[in-house]
Image 1 (cartoon, rainbow, N blue to C red):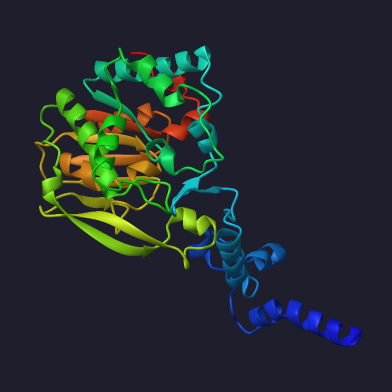
Image 2 (cartoon, helix red, strand yellow):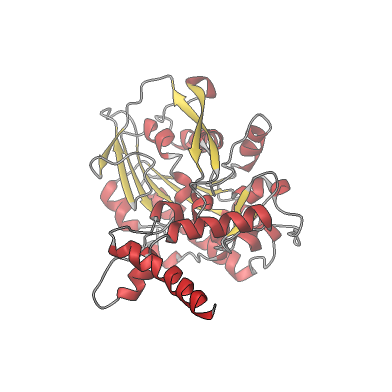
Length: 358
C-alpha cells in the first residue's frame, strides 16, 4: 500500500516535467495579465515556475474554486464585487475608495504649485492647458463594491485636488458627465479596471469642450449620434486575467462604432492601433488648420485616444504622470492635456521643479 502511494505521488509530481520534456509549455501569459519569465541558463528555476506543464490549467482550477465555491477573489489584486463586478485592489485603490489618509496641506500645496507653474509656463509660450482626473470604477460604481468595504472619509483626494485648483482655470472634473452617462447605460467594464467606449465618450466630450474654450480652432466634440452602439462578447479583461480566469469569465464590451469616417492615423509606432497601451503614440491628420496637442496620460486615456485624435493635426500621447517641458518645446503644441487616474493621487508626487519658471 505504501509503495503504491509512493509510486502514485512520484508519478503525479513528475507529470509537469514530463509535459515540458514533451514540448508542452504550461504557461499562458494572456491568462495571467503579465509577461512570464524567459528562459536563461543561469535562471532555469524561474522559467520552470512560470512554464511547468499544466500550470495554466492548475491556475484556472484554483481561481474557479475560490471564486465559485468560496465566493472570494483568488488574487489579492482583485476585489470581488456584487453581481459579477470585479474591482482593482492595488495601487491605492482601496484607500481611495474608503477615502482614508487624505492629502496633507503640504501635499495639496505641492500639487497646486505644480499645476500653476505648468499653466504659467505654457501661457508664456501661448499654449493652453487642461488638467483632469479620470475617476476609478469604484468611484462611479461604489454600490457594486462588497459590503465588507466601507467609506470612512468625507472627501476623496480627487475632491481635495479639484477644490485646490478651482481658481486656476485649468482643471476639468469629468465626474458629473460620467455619472450622467451612467444613468443611461453601463459605462465601465465589469472585468476590467477601466471605462468602456461609452464612459470614455462622456469624459472626452467634457475635456474637448474645455479645450475649445481655450483653442477655438478645435472642432466640436463628436456626439453620441455619431456612433452606433455595438455589444461584443469578449473574454474577461485585465481583472479576469489577474485571477487567471480570462478563459473562464466573459465580458460584454459595450463599444461605439463611428458612423463618420475617421481621419486620424497612427504614425508612431508604425502599425500600432490608437488604443494600444504603449509609452508613446503619435497620431496625425493631414489638415494644418487643426491645432496640435501633447497629452500626458495613463491607461485610462487608451479609450480616449481615438476620440481625441480626430481634433488635432498632430497629437503626441506620452504615458507618464509628470509634466515634460522638453517634449512641449520639441512639439510646439497649441494645447497640453494632462490626465491622471484618481488612485494615483496616493502614489504619485508631482515635481514642480520639472517645469521651468515662467
